[in-house]
Image (tube, rainbow, N blue to C red; front, top):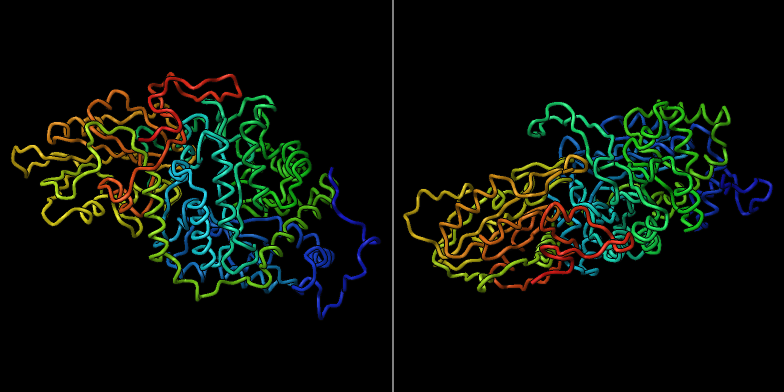
Length: 625
């Protein structure tokens, strides 16, 4: 076992143990000295508390104080009763105030999954998901989105973002494909690094800097279809056709079956770049590598990440990740912590975790040196963030949330992410003075469908769930006063005469999903979508199809019916960016970061390092008119 604890007899004589002026509270002292001083003052209960992260609905501020909890999180949909900036400030502030009242006053780190903006907060700007940003190939844009996201998070007192996902998805049937920038690990490494630098800013302890958290280490994008053993209860209000109680994941949290050379070549590269960009926290995957859960993988967590790569930050488990290591919870805790996990996202039954970990130390199944190593890593990051000097948000920054500048950035990102896949007879750009423009598809006028999963709720949901600009309203604002825009979600337009419109626009979307709920055996258009395309084809001279999706879709048979096809991914709240490009105010500049298959036979992608070659894809990676 790696033992990083220095014997007390060899410690620096600069450390003072004065109870009136503790060294750890002095920001002028080195971080190493502050950590050393604070660690020596801590009881075992206080150390274990720092290793414990609890979901915000499962505890109250008094719990933080009683158990010395080191971190609180909001999962997807984990917003306060009043989902406003002020509501967030109060929620986070109450937990923080409780932490400051403990004997040593160690602040909590509050963490969230802000994977495309501060996406749990009503009114925050929602940016395109990573799959769209991958199509921009623009590190500067991604850096600025990281910066803007950090500003909105920090304004509410949240200084830790469980992002970016640096997966390299190899099978588009995976429900987390849209969280990956690309199937090409070079693109992933470049854009993830830019995002990390944006989140963390010029200095990690800056007032608007936020911890990045690359995930999910290692190989989550390479799992094998059918290898997942996960059964997940259907969340209340979420509807899946033909499924009542539990949904069986097909690939998410499955098994990555590769030799070590391929694992490193494909999936480790972005993590090396992330560490070079300054990442201080890494989250292991809920998946396995050749049958062994990553949360139990001492070789990859301790020997490779902490040893070979020199990672000196801390490892946070994924949601209840330790629980999956063994059916025997005590053994799961022992195995996970000894493997190298420093903080456990419990997320519910924190008393069971705390008591199990304490018992393991008392029995000698986990050495105190392993506990001290974990806690010094956690404390070091808290000091680097400046958490002891700025535990609470500054109300002056609240005006940044949903600001005009951030919305304009979102609009720019949408425009740059669009990929033009087909454009027969110069169907695009559209004329702003076209006599009649027919717009069909529920997704044309639905913020929730534009944003996808991880938006207000974990799985996302249709409807105008947060402020923004729909694609329809963007079109309406772009055309001249002489043009007539007519919208019918079903594309029937029964109020019109038999005239054939000059232009028809169909906006199609996947129903929002997240994680394994998006595992899709056949990523083709639905029958309803196909019928809508066929119906609209008869009503217009030029038919433009806009696809909102979290992955490439199989559209080979429908493609001949389209004059123009645009991949718009999951663009977020700023739909005006779509209209900017449709009408030629800005050019199409996006390029595919994933290949689009002709048929199911071309799924999954086989990486060249595994002996694969570029197939005769319908649209290969890099394509974009």
